[in-house]
Length: 361
Image (cartoon, rainbow, N blue to C red; front, side, top):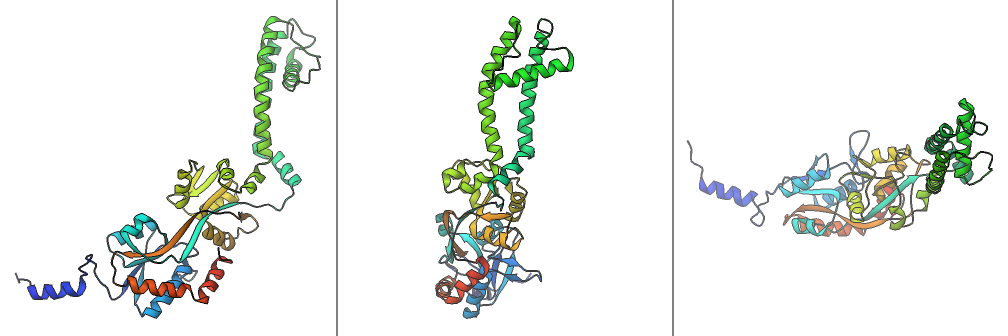
């Protein structure tokens, strides 16, 4: 077996190995990406575009730096690859955090984002919304449950009264309707007095129903009011306190929005794999709101035929600084960072922001 030449190994080590952090230097940079509109977008032809792509390719041209993209299925894969130094950098809009700054070389932030809230939009008047909700399944379920409770107590009273009070609680189906009428009149405290129990057992049931009805009527009033106005509640979200009372909040799993809800002791109603899935569920009214990266929601609503169906509220939570990231002590970091700052001050960058976001946050 041939013995390795120690001098050759030394030369190769000096040439390819960074002694500071053990980084393998490459003439052609490996740039990790994950599809994340509007920062990284795959177009119909299979090419790449988006805010991050445009910004990085301008920088790479100025630096005359050859590179190739390596695609990952999620951001977690990119972070892991950076950690194991399998990549030279990521141009996804990764959130700048103290832990990441300690672990990676983090560039100047190129975008400041926050979490947005998407809701269903409606051009209908309040009267139209009320009428539509009045005939909705949710409202009909509430009414049906109320009728079943009335029928339950009315039937019990009819069974107790039908022999000794047969003129007020008649035999057969008519008697069941008499019991239902009595239960409804008693619950609403109208008190016509045309039907009343005469037996001791009947009076006992009447007392139980009177106290029960007080609790039920208050509960059902709140439920019915909520059901009839459910489409207008989310439009009144103006802050964190309003968001906390929304019943069905949708988020993308393993995202900043999930951390945001956990931080504020809120529980999501449903988790989705992508924001597109969440927006489709919102358009079907399976959830009341979707919380996600504001710029991404704005872009997806505009480009996925959700305009007119969904809208983005004019509020935002949790500002986040987004940066490119490289392994620690990467030799290109300083030059890249200076060029990035230079590019962000040029007028074309604002034009690119307007192109993908329609407005700058």
